[in-house]
Image (cartoon, rainbow, N blue to C red; front, side, top):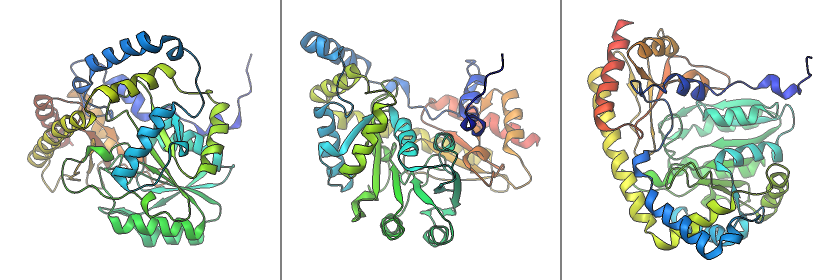
Length: 394
């Protein structure tokens, strides 16, 4: 019997990254496709001990329901750290714990988007955000970007000429997919324009703590005088992604709306995982742990850039030079399609993510994203060598 599906299902497609990861599951494939942290840096023993102590000291509470907002102690730690690190002024009551940043993005669609409303985004932008927003039958307006982030003149043009702009979605630090970082001046100007046009800003910051060169920059939220900026963060990149614990913070009235829609989605996040993170933070030096991550990623990023420079000379490709995060963005000559190159690379047992899917409208197919965090140095060297072989065959 044929069942009638909701109209929204016609807007959805399988995640391109997830589909590519299925192809790269074989151990002989060197995959630069996933945005994966380095698993050898997960603090397994420390989390194991935290879990033991949580069950021993408060097992009944850990296995019980908790509030939708999340554990008070965890929200207090998050707000204090954000205030100290990126210049915000949050209280614990302005923080909602979510099941990964992905849920925070999806809840934002529920809170802000009606059919036909517009999400303004960087060009290119985070693929999974495109997928989440599409479920709400929205349209997208891409804003031109350069090495300093969104071009503010183009953003202002979009806001002036486009009706029903409801969300400006951005990743200002080491952006996914390009690895670029916004300048301080553009962060400030974004807050000003969002206030002027009364559009919500989702400042997604999963990689901000992973800066291994240069100075840490103030958040967009630190310039927000109108209460229109919401801050997204996660433990996935500084602790481990499997716990699926992240957060969204913002104006108290806005967060109350997010609590309402989260109650209809999953009631709450994993109580045990939240308590384990609190216990881990009490007993361990998170700063030292993050420093180890930064050092490892710095080494791997520099090695990948060196290898790309040797294997993909300037007439074959250009690429970004990130100061942190997980990704390098590669642009090929206009006549080379990265999807065709991927097929050649899979023959060489190496993989990446073609860049076209990161553009909701324009689909620039001569680009691709590479992840450097999840591969040891010897596989980075060999993988980029294989990439060069495949590209030269084209």
